[in-house]
Amino acid sequence: AKKYGCPADSLGLGRGSWRLLHSMAAYYPPTPSTQEQKEMSEFIKLFANFYPCKPCADDFKEWLQKYPPKVESQDTLSWWFCDAHNEVNRKLGKPLFDCRLVKQRWWDGWADGSCD
Ligand code: FAD
Image (cartoon, rainbow, N blue to C red; front, side, top):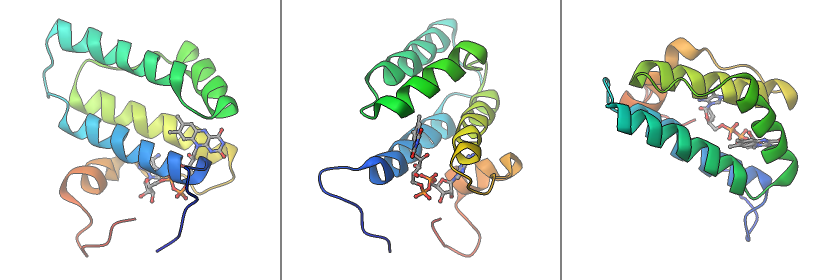
């Protein structure tokens, strides 16, 4: 496995953050209440405000302005985070993730038991 810096560098921080965010979407209710939707929108906004990598946070906040979080359901939120992550992948020249596989990656896990 890759080793990351201690204290957190942008790689380890990013990797851990996406793990949290995609997992939160996977565990988000399929049919959230109005209150839950409001809270998730707020969480994402505040997360962006305090994300401890300024250039990352600035771009993410700009993206949030253009594409407000789709908090209507577990599926829409999972896709929305996948799109957000792909935007960063694109910026960093990484391969784009096939969002149809997001549930398999972050809920069931890959069939071969791998974790990446
Ligand atoms: P990561 O990109 O961290 O991905 C981890 C795992 O998620 C992958 O192994 C894959 O299985 C899965 N995955 C990949 N793409 C998707 C997707 N679209 N949907 C669902 N699952 C996916 N780094 C910078 O250098 N500059 C930035 O501006 C920047 N902005 C960031 C903004 C945010 C909000 C966050 C959370 C992170 C940001 N990062 C940024 C960090 C960057 O996205 C990576 O986390 C970091 O480069 C480590 O990459 P990694 O190759 O380990 O995999």
